[in-house]
Length: 269
Ligand SMILES: [Zn+2]
Image (cartoon, rainbow, N blue to C red; front, side, top):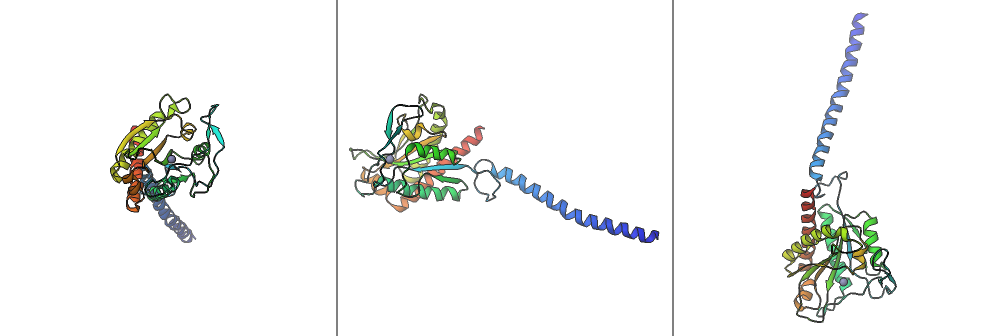
């Protein structure tokens, strides 16, 4: 009888050990993996495809909409403002290519969305076609409500003077009564994006400029910028912005700037 008893205990012990060893191995592997994720997740959000790591969310707003969409109603210039502005404007047009600005803005925004997603960002779009009737206030609200970390507004410029060329960025000034508190972060974002864009796509930089009369900026709750990619009224800018090869570089350049911004922000924290 004692022999039988020992035998039973040994068997039980062996079973227990056999069950415990793989469980322990799995646990330490899982631990290692989660440590690795914490390292790589950092704040670029890029590289790893793990679903558990935090991703930065980029809200992209392709400027304007098709000219068939009626946006003539008005909305307040900023929260609490009695000054009213049109819900959205029509935008400019390529003087040499004939391409409407809303089309170019959407083309580049969609390329940018794909480029950012490839780099591991989550992207929110205010419109993905030319028929969406969304006002400037609604664009800013959507960017925030959809969890955006930054709000990138994509536009192209136009002027009577065809000799004026180059890209520029618009941000709120520190004196902006609605979003002055976002001025510093917005400037940092715009500086990164404008520089990387001009370098990659070969546009002259006209610098980061303060604009406090933009509804879509004044209603933002995120660091916000408008990138004016170039002048559609300048021959070289207009032709280059319509060139698919240049368009790829434009999207990559903007994405480089987004990378640079989050890298810089991560170092400061
Ligand atoms: Zn525009």
